[in-house]
Amino acid sequence: MPDPKQMSGIPRPVGDLPDGSISVRLIRGALSNNITNHPVQLTVGDKTLTVKTDENGRAQFDKVAPGAAVKAAADVDGEHLESQEFNAPPQGGIRLMLVATDPTKKANAAAPPIPGQVVISNDSRIVIEPGDEVVTIYYLLNIVNSAAAPVTPPSVFMFDAPKEAIGTTLMEGSTKQASVQNPRVRIEGPFAPGVTPLQIGFELPATSGIVAINQKFPADFEHLAVVVKKVGEATLSSAQLTRQQEFPVAEGTYIAATGGKIPAGQPIAIEVSGLPHHSAVPSSIALALAVMIVVGGVWAASRPRIGDEAAARAAERKKLVARRDKLFNDLVRLEHDRRSGRADERRYATRREEIVAGLEHVFGALDGDEPSQDLADRAGTAAPSHALRAS
Image 1 (spheres, rainbow, N blue to C red):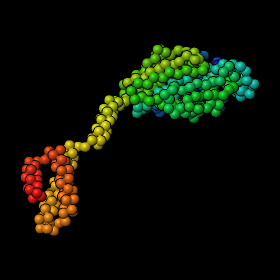
Image 2: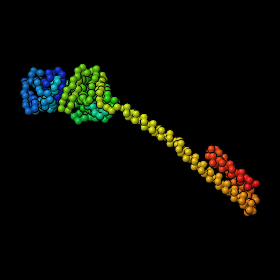
Image 3: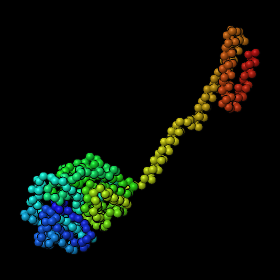
Image 4: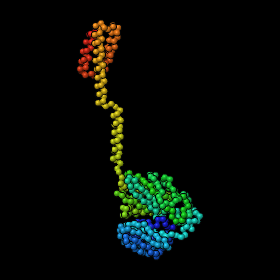
């Protein structure tokens, strides 16, 4: 099966090597084309070590100082191959491949497509990076066609990101055959011999401190690999992961986990817990208090306050007393004009009737409002006096 050349030189933490060991495999184009007895250089700090590849195309460097900056390199047929720079782990080892160009690859790619299957190679991985109440997920997939000619799978290679995914994006380095229409990821065939890279990223909310990923892929995932950046007390769990370990690098500590083959269409179920998050209790309490304040304000605004009621009643009573006093004065003047002969009898009778009716109305209103004793006394003494004058 051709090796993913675009992933050449990428270090992969493993637990099947002694602590501090780095294994570099040198191949030409395909996994079956090992380059044996060929020198490979490993730069460790300011030193360069050289080891020749064995019959499996591997050169192994042991007892590399933990944390040292490391880079692997080799020259094959005039082509310089070089790995990414990385830090030697204090526990476990590192495997990586350096892949020389296969001169027959272009010729095979030009052949007409045939029906066939593709797989997601064992160099693919799922990377999880926690953030502030969100988690960024990366699918770094290498889709491999092991045939010598382009293949067209029985169905279109496509899958949907998790339903909670936000901003699913096609990343740089992906095949131009790929497209994303949220949440669907799609690759148009045929697939050329070798590797078709697909790299996508998206975010998942992590407000509760737990993120669950449930993902189906349309091809066999040959070897499940998950990498989680450890933040706080983050832990990784999945029944499909058989081995995991933590290892430090320059950017922090990571959890690396591996599992077996996942058949096409079978969900990959992963959960990351212990993520930093803000408790929802304070915000819930604040929201409840805000609602109570608003409701209380609306209720208070919809009814008169006790102080306002008392002030309004006092103002109304003051108006009634002033009206009563004016009517009394009018009645006194009217009686005085009649006695002095200045009032017309017909006008006197009509006006007196109006004043008496007004007084009755005012006294009725004052009685309903429970008048104070001084006003009641005044009303009780003044009326008989005026009535006597009127008679």
